Image (cartoon, rainbow, N blue to C red; front, side, top):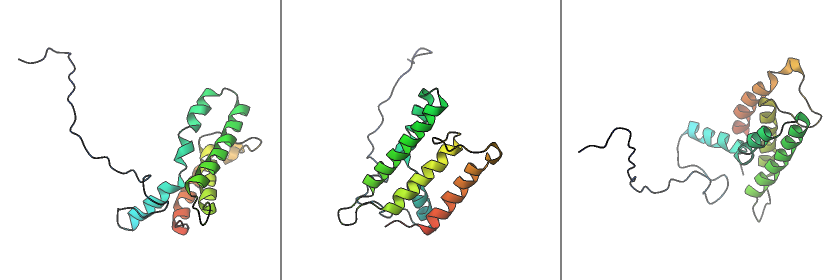
Amino acid sequence: MGFPVGVLTIRKAAARPLQPSGLESAEVGAPSETVGPIAAWMDRLVKLVPAEVLSIFPVGNSLIAEDFARSWWALACLFLTFAIRAKATWSKDKGPQWAAVFIACAAFAIWIYVLGSHFPAITLAKNLYYLPSILVLVWTTIIPIFYQGE
């Protein structure tokens, strides 16, 4: 006998082993298990994006009504990007990977302007509306070619 129309049934899914997301690697910059030049380039590209802060910036930005306060929120998130990336790339012998910290901060700064926000006292002229999008394309294409990590 079947279930009546409109009744939702839930099946228990078979247990699957957890797949690593790349964040669990023993050391920062460890090579991916994927092979080939495209996969390696994509790994480097993903490491540019400061995902730690990109996830909280839009939420905080949507809660703030004033443009002036939003610009300070952007600056606070830039400092968070700096602190989180410095901590994530820190090693006992060498300290933080300053190049990676700078790259993450620059990528976040560009992203702020792509989203239409800005930092305090640094607004973009109306006739340069396209510049942030062009910078994203250039930055994410050029940096992975020249920066390989430490």
